[in-house]
Length: 235
Image (cartoon, rainbow, N blue to C red):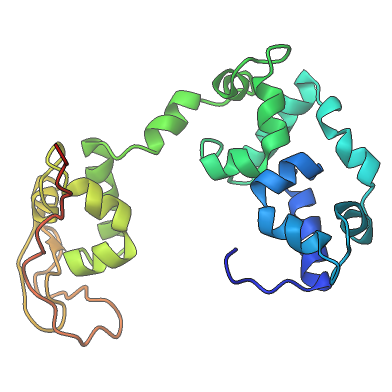
């Protein structure tokens, strides 16, 4: 984490947290995934070596270096199920980096050969996970309905700030081209307003007088959403 000031107490707490998450704490792995932590722990002002830092955290350094040799098929599957049950995104690159030992073991030819096959072998739907990360037109419309049902504002200014993923996806040409277009496709009665609650949209079944502005939003917001920014390609 850039700019983070490490103390011995913070280093120990972070090492213990990573250990609980199942992160590979071997020197080679941690140097690649958490270089700042590794460098700070080895500094003379802290522990002087990674071994000393690990032992200060109450862990067995030699045992950590053997972590890759301890995996078997059942342990890999059990760990994948546990991480999924805890709500981790198994397809997130950051997850694979933080759980490098598990990921590499699962991808080893002697076990499953790929992360996809390991996830599937654990009884999880890899394809469904992949699709849930992609903003399709159907997912955009379903999410708009969910946002409305939750009583949250649907104005572009609020969505751009609080739900940037769906906002950007809805405005892509291959989807709806604009946030207004997505609201219309979802059956939303889009009535641009100025002043408090500007750009707020209401579902057709909700009373028009109901204002769904963000709490404390007293700033005047343009009624028209800004144009989609595009990057010019160099030829």
